[in-house]
Image 1 (cartoon, one colour):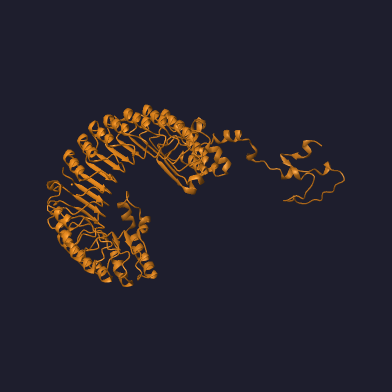
Image 2: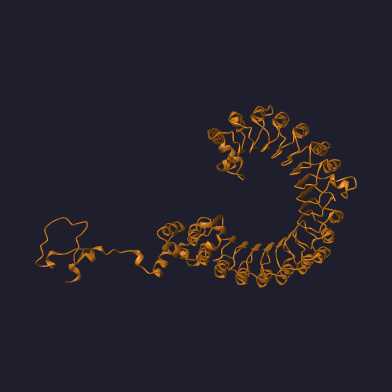
Length: 627
């Protein structure tokens, strides 16, 4: 038998004459043939899958556009992986798309962070504007992102500018180095908890990513001094550096980086590193461009380090400094920083246990431009340049001010913002003292102060002549309706935000005063107070047509279903409502409120969305509703 006996006109069939003695009755061709010696010929099907990968690769790289490549990527994982392995240079020039400028952003977290999804992103974004920003947040040792996934991004996303890799133990130098070689436009790189990344990856970044301007290295145990030195030598566009908890990084790397890049670095953040005063001394001498400095948990830096940093007087442009848990920050060091940084405006000290009131006085005298001072858990501070903002939090050593207090009285005249939180020694006497000089206050936060009563608050506010905008008295259990009444009467035309959460003596009388006297309030919180249905009715019936946007009654057990109609009326302007833990509001009332308030939102939805293009979209409105 020859081939022509089996194939005629391009179709496979059996000729009756080819098998003598076998009877073939005249009938239609069967759709499914019975098994026979020739069944192998009938069942064999031609498939592109039988082609070797080399042939498939050549076919796929010649697809005419990104749309066709995306469609082919949906055929199978095998095709997707092949497509993601094609670099931009390997795409046939005659059909190559114009690469976008990196307008797209992608974020993968937890179980969604896999190599397969990265491959899909690589193929899908290349012709749709290009991938500009990628954040991958893994799940530790369960993370499914490896070097293969980063390789896919490297092949298909040369426009990548921002890359964040968090908690990815399976990623190593190989993956990041491939990114560096294929994505030279990277400007911002964030590496956090990636133990497989070492100095070799940073060397590749330094050699290829010359536009790098922002680098963060956090808890990367493999990165050491050599990597930092390479970045310092090559990345002359670097403007921001943040290094945290990297045990192999010490003075050799940090000091070299600061000496080499101090003339153009503007933001420096050093946290929990094994460095000494040498690094701070180098920073003080070479940090001519530094405007923002954060120093946290530097246990190896002593008082001399801070003193030399300040007295080197090289940081003329420093505007903001934050120091936390640094035992070397003392009164001497603080004053030296004030002397050496003439443009210093914002100072934040947290858990600096050796700083006392003497140091603050020295800072106030030396830093003539100081506007904001924030102190938290600085227990040796016992009492206060013309500040615009002053904040104290959890300072156990604070006691009531008096006439002999070292705070210069004239320094309070320009104060706009005052925040005192959880300082048990702070009471009415301190408020009365500040009230004599602080006549320009607009933002007042007195939170968790059991020693503050109506008398103290009234002493602080009675001489205010600009009008309060924001008042937070949360947790002041000894403040009553008298304070709210006075605030609403004196500052009702300017007050926009009032927080009375946890003020146990607040009743409906406060809401009546707000409804009667306040014209501009848009954020009101009376959670965990004694307000009831009567107070909500007063708000809804306000003659001033309140424009409340955020309203909170959480934990108010006296509010019942009777308030439903009043809340619905207020809902015409609401963007957020908290009725959590209001046990006397039934589930049916909550459902009814949801439906009613949604109707208001939908009726004005188009207008609201157009007005809030840069804010929260309408679809996120009810993220603020709790019940």
